[in-house]
Image 1 (cartoon, rainbow, N blue to C red):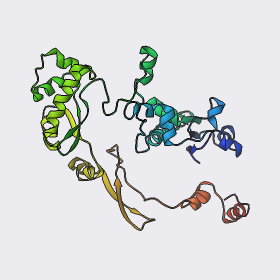
Image 2: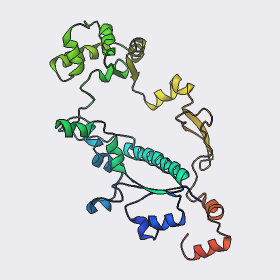
Image 3: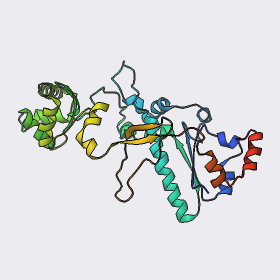
Length: 311
């Protein structure tokens, strides 16, 4: 009766249990099988049996090489659990794509999702820069781009992000009191590592340091220069825009026996808005529903399976 079966284990795990893809699809030809593993179901044999976790996916996929301060400082793990969440998103949309195909054609299929490949897919132009230009992108610390400003700057009471690209850079120069017709500032804009770039960085850093986050945010956004604070959990909880979009909601947690509060829903659906239909439940909570409703097992069937140690 299932439409999609997702599993996360090392390559070949279910084959050993007699649940290879061909056997499962023979029982349910419309089923979408999504295998999630660190290194994939096929490939070089040295990798297929390896254990993998979030940090391994980040490192092998290439993300970790790009995050953190330059050598000799160590690379930095992107938190929270970036590789796990990225892989989960790939798992969801690919499974749904397979489901749509099965509904149209009556044929299921097998999806092989390797965590490191999901991470590798979001490295932007990293590999193109290597193949076409021979450039190995390195860690740049908080300076995230050759273009500036595209970074974090310290105000009197915390950090703000400022991003001014293209013609918006001219607006920023006017705010900073710089001559937009002076070619050195355009060079500073596109070559952050240049002498001119360092001069501009000193100017904007000094301007931000003299002001509060609120002042910087209001002045820059009034001129359509992208700017926002670097938000903590407390900041996000108290922010009026988060509140206006109901980004934090409460629901009943059955295990705790009380209401808890956490992240709400995104994106926002006009006809079928998201809702929490129940909180986290204990392991095996839905076993009876699955056994009786979906598998059609009777109590005596379950007793035999328990006696055999299968369930």
